[in-house]
Length: 363
Image (cartoon, rainbow, N blue to C red; front, side, top):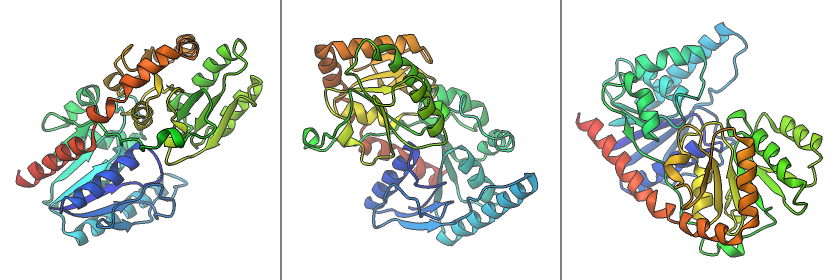
């Protein structure tokens, strides 16, 4: 198949990581794959295989007002349509809500089937009004809609011609020398964009509750985002600037996902959190907020991790303290957690996407 894939960028994030790996594996299987990104490609944090053709549209500028926004949207749609047509695809695959809408707009009055993939929880992820209004109408034109969880499928089902297809994300096998990669990671580790949905403000409050009784405990939060200053201010107000580190973006993340440590996912909502999968694959004991979409489909509570009610700071602090104090519990949960590598393998995920794309072409 000649496949065109579309995503806003490869600048970090779980969706970008999955897209980069997916198109690379499809190319390795003999498909002719082109990856179009809306940005200029200068800030890529994920690589694609040598067989994947990259196209950078450089149309992701901010708009100052509604008129400028309309003009920018028209420019993006025109550029995306031209780029897709030049590749003469049999099928188009788009990732992420707003990009999906743009791709469907760009493919109007064109016979090539478009498969769209939602990469977060559509019930919780807020997008601007024009896109939110267009999405249900345009998704009916999609050849297929892929989601990460059954909960997401229930949300988008009224927008679709057929039942959405659930395909969870996949996780890499950790490096064989993982124990030798350990750097100075603290007892608690978290990874993600420094944005409200990741709940790092909740995590800092939870850590503060256990810090006074455990002067040796530390927390590291890896990532970047618009809330860095706010989170640093919160940390400093609590007097924890020496015990909570925020080193920034880090890839690969394996060196800090150390067996014996505790990984904490404090999100208010998720899609299918890649960082949680990676931490479990590395053998870390993991605590996750049981937020909408994702964690409950990954963590088997009490078997390979601990689930805590969403936004429950006291519950999160209690779980962190319990794992910190119980090495045997950490070892049991971390040992069982490694099974995610077989539960959510890359070959199985790519097989399912390949089948969806093939069916779209046939139909």
